Image (cartoon, rainbow over all chains, first blue to last red; front, side, top):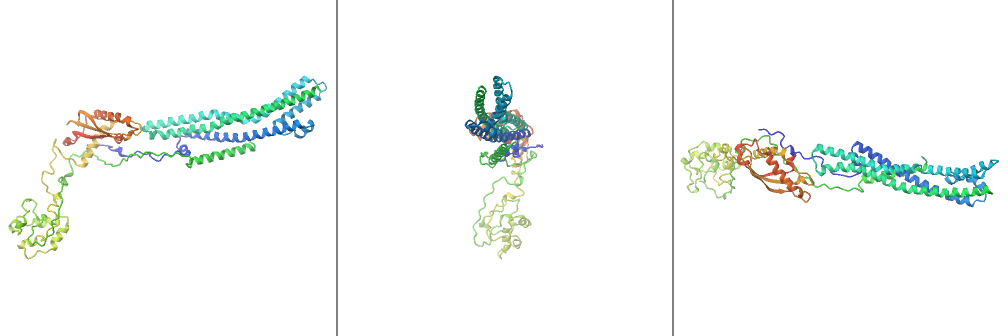
Length: 237
Length: 291
């Protein structure tokens, strides 16, 4: 009358250690896929903030320099001297002015100048200079938009993957107590948390910075319109 | 990548490192306090159900408390103490102190025995005392001098060796006969419990949920001689009900009853201990049983 393997139940259940929710612990316990997702999202967050810092700095500086340049331009007595002095500056207003002046000189150098054609060319030249400057300025904004829209999905992917894995582990263990289920789900949800952590600043910054770019663009557009009216008046004189 | 971008990258990297460092060091950490786990100790591994009780060495009678008699003055003719008595005749020795002068005839029936028995006796103090006290001249016969006859009253009770008697009365350890009410040893009882648990375990599926592993259901089960469940399985009681597992308690009891009904008939239960397992009460169902 032998009883094999009786009281194997007496072995105490393992894994009853203290539970911590520090990011390092959650990261180290996660699956490799979830780890990759977390690292990617963290890098995206770092990049987002780098873009936010550098872009808002550059946008503010550009706007200030444009304002100063336009004020100085409208107060200048001699346009040729002003252009010669400050026409080479690396900022949108100066580029628009330089493009307009160059086209003006090229057009007025012809012998048989037609005012309509010259006006068209002036508008086109200054418009393209403005568009080029704005394009160059808003180069990084699309990255913010991408991160803001994609990061939550990437985090969700990590979470779904981690929950699938932990459910598989639960099925293997045949123990469905909450203490077994909870840690895996917590570390899986950490991926979504990082995704939102990266996406929320990216979306806010994208909206705010693109609004700033739009304001700068309309300001430059007004400057170009002012130039155009000036050139147009000169043509008729 | 111009200067402003490098500056931005540096700033954001530093900010992230700071933030995650703070999180890791526990500045914003939520401490999770786990409820204390139930202690699962008291392991007793029993390999087999014992067929025979092993408790024959120990007496089942409760030993009488030994009361020391008053230490009286030297009584030259005190009665010989218990160890000196010949074992086979237990009724003869308690001689009343009145007829203290021991007649040689009364002692004589077994003269060599008293010599052997003192050596067996574990408490040496009494024998030493007895040896130290030399027999006074008042010893009635020359044979009595060789015999350790203490003149003082002993501190020990008369029956301090009762439990250690090698030849105990036959009623104490009966030969195990089938169907009789054999008393069980602790090892045999544990082995019987383990055997019953082993047969129930495949059918025992406790409900899961928060704190469900704290629930304990106690059943009362009647078995017949062939191991079948007789009559109704009754829930005697439940323990470990907390607010979070209250909803599971009824299910827990129901599953316990189901497990017993499905495990019936119980096999391999020793018939000679039928009295021990004909009424299993309480039969305990808890989380440990399922593991």
